[in-house]
Image (cartoon, rainbow over all chains, first blue to last red; front, top):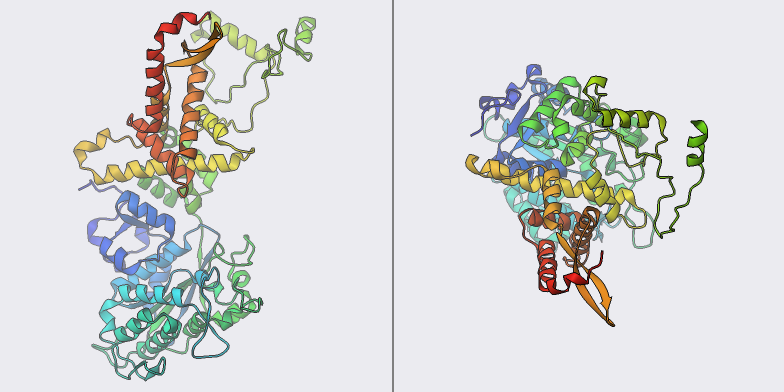
Length: 364
Length: 228
């Protein structure tokens, strides 16, 4: 329907993220719309979602950090405990997008995806903070938990009937989930009964941890990809207050507690992909971007050992590719921006930072 | 030479004191921030040569901090931003303007990508041309002035200067968006809707312009009451 631009990867390579290599660095590849609907109901950055809506397609640039991550995923040994990958970098350099690229690779390989689009949303602006039904000193967040369960269901539908629970869970006097029930039922329980949804999340994560090691090859075996954006929220401070007006610790929130257990490498058969984020964080200075600064002492000790992957601004080739993509999609409208001098001005104003360039080109 | 120039550089008051006047001596020239290349001597006409001479000698007013030498600088957009600004909050006004341009572009580019190839050339995607054209469509050609004659005041049709027409168009756009739209929509959303409607010669602002024209046409009998 449209003539192929020289820097957009041809159709045959669209679905096969396995074939992305260093030679494709700087080129764009299209995410199929069905995949976007299923895999990223809330996962993509909001400005990228706007871009998908405007251009009627979702194109992601293939960049070295994502390629590095995918090559590690290809070569890892999945009988050993999972490796933790941490994407770090300055604001607006493309950490979330690289994470989504790697996650799309995992999805196309048939892994089970556990994706927390932004952990910061669980530690701030919570309208309903209920004291936990199961443990006295914990707090539940029913809205966030049920929202996450709904998204999990959309992404991993085909696994829900295959996986079975390994123990009996009792929610209230009259409700319980028996051993051997399909996981789908557990999730429906959490979505329908909001009061126990945070505990259901914990139960689901526990089941996945136990079964990811994948007993036998064949039907039951699956690889688990845990992707968390904004990991520094798990070990930072919250902006939530308890009823006696004291600050809430992240440890006291059920969702955070269960997610922390997921981050430990005491299970096998998967990978943990994370990205740090300063933009949504609470009580962190804007200039902090290194893992030690954002994770803090406690976070760093918990996450160690991890594989750090640095994400930086565009280099000349990537900037050129981005500029040509915007020209191709009829996005750069101002006549001066299409000239050589305008391009130099864009380089100067944005310093080749992906997000600033995107915001500049939006109104030019 | 120096003595004759010196009296012009002293503090100056106009002979007739108006309410809004520039404190600069009229001898001062306006700054020209554009970076156009110097045209060689041979291609200039004698008037232009004189103008160039004058520019090298005479003093120039101070440039505004919102003017840039980049080609992205648009005087019409700057004027609109100044008119939208409240309490001196230029950053907010400029932010609203950029968001408006972005919204216009998004709507048009989305329409462009979803339409078949035949209709694509008719869709104007450049938000700057949309803005300029919409403003042109909102400018009234003739205005009304109140003239007192024999104890009664009449609405007399009167020609308008270019500046007045531009001012009226911008004022109507801004007041329309501030007053007559739903309370919970953002200003950039309201502005983009109004600008796209004006671009297509529809919408409340163009209707207001047409009403003014009709009033002027209805009152054409009083046109001779104008003495200027």
